[in-house]
Image (cartoon, helix red, strand yellow):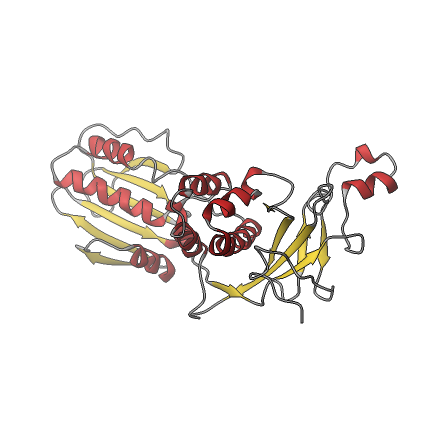
Length: 328
């Protein structure tokens, strides 16, 4: 089943998404001379642009998401080009490409030229997009919440300099008197995944705190946020260090252009807590494994979960004293 609409106005990202959510193939007559027709195909997650054959075919073989074939529609007396775009994770970008091609056809360009020019102009926008994994999203939110708090208390220079996570250092933050490993979870308990045997290993002479952050999905709560809004909020606090911040985000896989892929809203589930990682804390470290694991060199990767829900939490020193829950 397919519905057909005539002469649609420019579609917003929200309207494009609405058509895909409907689940019904919908055809649009985009132009009369030359004819151009758009089909939104939600079951296949595709957009199709159809136009009568005139001149040579455009070259699209270099584009993994685009295919082109020549066919004769049932209601036509001549062949039409059918260009199909895989719109997975880039529905609006695919629509913008179609709109750009039709604009150039309307201005008198050949189909080959219109496709070539549109692809060249939108090549960055049409680059393959992928969301960060849920684990990376949660981890980044935790680090940004800490970073934002430290900016407020110690200023941007100290905060951005102390943020070591993007540099692949052992711990997420290094402050004057201690190190901090930030762990963020969506679970009801303070259950955190420790991804290596060095994450909770102290640097000699420096205290280490695990900072436990709990978030949960939010509806329309006033204090809720999305990952893009959190990035924007932190960036708005920066002046001298904004380039360093942006470079760090890019290294973590974040791109502002992909912001529309992150629509989930969150809020804090509880006040963050800090735990001193000392001899009583249940940490699996390289130093510990070296003493108890036979042929230790053959163990290449360690990952485990720590449930800190009922562990005694600590009074974390500045600059995280205002971020973490105070001792009762």
